Length: 267
Image (tube, rainbow, N blue to C red; front, side):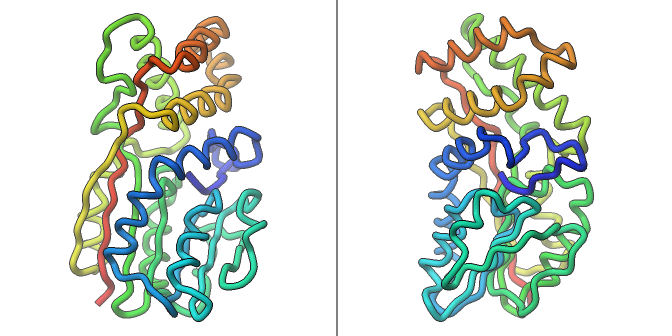
């Protein structure tokens, strides 16, 4: 979960300490999905990759392993607080706004963004620039959330703990929508890739229902947005404390929104 868009009211500021916790949890949950697709696309030694809205370091590092010393990985974000330490060797870290700045030069065999575009107001322009950066035959792999496909973090709403979790997630998503997020964006990715002129478009989706990483992600996200939820009158401190306590028991099955992965190749 990547670009830090505080200028546009982005809720999950990379500069907050909870961001690092969230990046670690997202890595545990979604890196296996991301790299399954990366490997199926044949990303290998000597290739050039652009990781858009890198956020944490795990994807740039994984790409660097695949392209080796003869390849290159450019990791960009508006806030590079959590990736600057991995710069060096084949990894270049740049502060960059994908919707406003020209793409990094050179052309890429893979351009990848995970959980980024849903938060960007001008996501159409961001997508255009990513397609522009592809070499002929290069792959664009976009992975983004679609909370509208499965809106409940606790699909098994069996008691008050689950009902509270579902209400707080609904309130959080209302804040996201008010700041320009598109909560049905993931499902549009295959169509958008075809409309951008890409070939061989495919897509799938994944969402975990429960795991320790889900609990860590939920707690960090709630702590990070607590002040705004209370200030907007969407939740009380008591409700948030109760929910965090419920999550801490390890017995609350609280999942994530579906993440849609879609990929296509530039002719």
